[in-house]
Structures are given as C-alpha cells and as structure tokens.
Length: 254
Image (cartoon, rainbow, N blue to C red):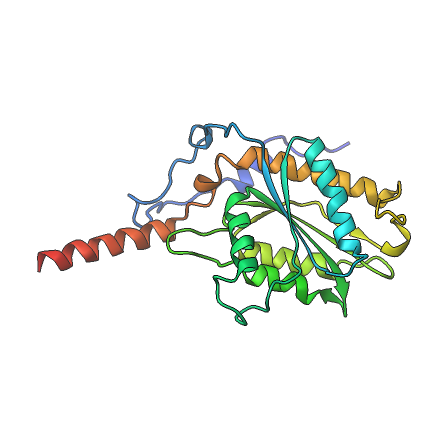
C-alpha cells in the first residue's frame, strides 16, 4: 500500500516568506511574543459572580423557571448568583439612567464576572423584555466597559418545537458587547410540559443540557475572570491611547 512520506505535508505547507517586515504597525505596542506567562493571574478569593437575566414578566414565566433551575445548579457549583427581576424596567431611552431599576441592573452588571441570559422565543426572536435589559447595559461608561471580558451563557424556552432563534440572536449581542460567550447553549422546547406546578423542572435531556451549560459557564468563568483584562487588551486601543497621550503632551508644549 502506498503511503505519503511523513514530511510531505510539512514541506508543502511550510511558510516561505522572504520579507517579514511589518511596516503598518507600531512594533512597540504589539503584544509579542504572547506566552503562557502573560496569562498568569492572581485568582480572586471570592466565589465566581454570576448575574442572571430572564425575558418574561409573566407570573408563570418559563424563562424565569429555567433561570432559577440554572441558579440552583450554579450555586451548588460554587457560584454567587444574583437574578435580576425585569419587572418595572422602563423601555430604553424612556427614562433617565438614574431610574431605580436601570441603576440596579447596571450595578449588578459591574458586580458580575459572568452572565446567563434566558429568553422565551416570541415571533421567532428574543422578547422585548430581554432586549430591553441588554439595551440598558452600556458598551462603555467613561473608561469602563461594563460587559467586556465577562463570560456569557445563553438559553431559551419555546412554547412549541425546539428552536434556536433567540439564542443565536443573543450570541450576536454577546459578541457585540465583547463578552466571552461559551460554546454550549440550552433550548427547551414545549416548556409548558417541562415544569411542574411549583415551577420545578422535570428530569429530562433538556434539564441535563442546562447542567452541561452551567458546568461549562463555571469553568470558563473560573479560567478567565482573573485574566479578562489581558485577554481583551487590544492593539488598536493601545495605539489609540498612545496617540491621544502624545497629542495631549504636544498640545501642552505649544
């Protein structure tokens, strides 16, 4: 049987560039080389802090029930959990940022190291209640980016067959808000049949998937929370900051 020589792949794919110059960058600001030593961090002494948001204010809210089940799991795994109640939160831009519910949400975001977003799917999308909470979280507050570098898990519940529209939309939002969105996710179909009268989730593959997602969220949070500042440190922003500093210094010398 014919066999390919062991070194063929390496030889054909070996980089063969004669010009290795990088004229378009400021080499003094590039993070190079990137090593495991740079990822070393002082591990926080407190338990991982997880904020949970759900997307319905109905009395019998299945997204809240799923969130509460996830909260029980996270607590058992060692997390400190806070659940934000969206009831009373105004529409984005329909109230000042000093509104009690807006201030409460933003304080919890700053407190957290990871988040769980759980929304019903309504008309093929996440609910307005869910989106309003996310829209009240600013991308930046002065020099602080409240959501940047935090971990995120996304879940959804559906009244009918299983769907992934809401979780897919929330993934896009998580990336936009510079969050570390974990690979796993949960989608509970026919949610009305998955919870008992007390709001507790019945044993099922859907429940076990939530267990999987919460385990993964905890692992990613523990792994990254002491390193999120370094992981989200960007060349373009370092370059911009250096240019702004230079401009200020030059302005003072005039």
